[in-house]
Image (cartoon, rainbow, N blue to C red; front, top):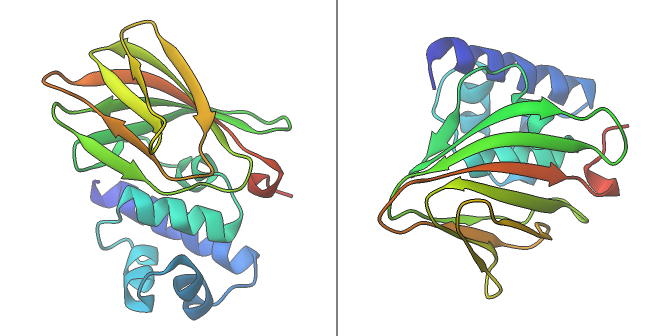
Length: 176
């Protein structure tokens, strides 16, 4: 992530934390990250993982898209890139993302907030995705929807996969 995007994320993260009356120590402890890492992130330094950003969003009780909305570049790590396309304003909240998985990627995703569902539509390549132990294989044009409030995975083979992902948040993932 470039420096401008890191600064933007850090400022937005700090504003959300303060708006919710949380200290650095509280949020870091709840998200399972070091206070020093959270401090660096808020200062626009560091290199946050997707899982770290998800955990912070969950602890702040905001959709992932709300936390990353001010950033205009794809977020990525370990062969996976995501970019927020749009955020719904209705209830339940639905966020839309473009996602790319590099060849030979295996990404394990942590459980999202209770009631959250993901829908994936494969644009190109081949993808196996879904809850661990109950995945579905997708070819271009296929769509799968699954509960994302449990650990799930994304796996590619020899070619990259591009897809559209929508996340529908359950009641706990809604902003007030």
